[in-house]
Image (tube, one colour):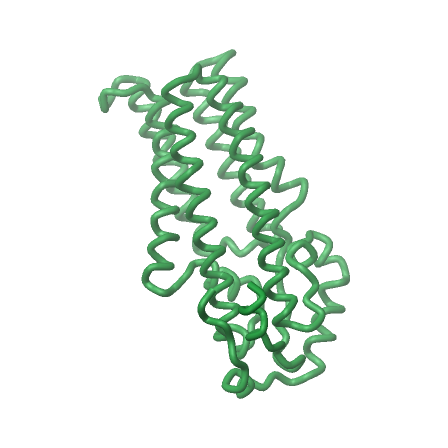
Length: 266
């Protein structure tokens, strides 16, 4: 690593990124993550599977629309998410009522569909790296207004390539855990165990990723504020406008991208 660090050269202040992010974390986000699980547990134990599926689906759809109102970049994905949730609920209830037969229970269809979706997302993320277009790079361009000099810098590209690998690993590894737990535990234990394990695993991976990204980008950009600050919900309460004023004072010069050597071998 010491040898690699000698290849780092900081980007000029003129090409520092213009921060333009919406709150991606916070109490609303955590509450919306937990409530579908709570509703499913309550209605499954005191009602039936159909009511539990409907309650969890209704909250998930409500949460998606709430994210849009809070300014999160959901955009064209909102109709896709809504249709997906409705179809999953409809098929699960159809199986529960014996209208269709897949040889498994309604619960298996409902949770199996979600697990299969995670596997698909993980494979898409891994595939995006293999074809040279990491999804994390695309996402960063949506969240941050990036100048070309930074977007094309080898340090930036290789860092987000590795972040995409981490995200793919999480999706696939958590899916394997979900399948094992569903097949070896009672449904209530599955719901709680999956939520706890995935939360801990995701927290540790995000923490490690933040440390890794901050270490890399702090050498690339003078005054890099850190991922935690960039993604803080408080960014919209004044510091966001302050940061915009600071970064917009100096014009960007994309020609600097030709002058900055990178590592490219990480």
